[in-house]
Length: 100
Image (cartoon, rainbow, N blue to C red; front, top):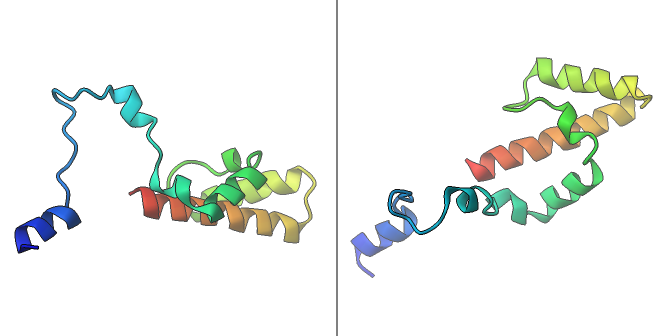
């Protein structure tokens, strides 16, 4: 294997949508890398109702506090609410890491 072919395997060219036979909607529906993680799949199934409580983007103190408050308002005890928050934040961080 030459250095050029090894480099092309490690750094594939960015997909070019101009003139592509793949529709943009089909590209958007393609599975993300995080979708293949069994850990992430399990969290998404178990906490599907709680996932929308964490605002989009990187989890920061303000968004995590808002989610914690919402969980406490739903009647969860503090310890249980913190465990749910931790799992949802882990899902978000792994997804951000895997999906770019």
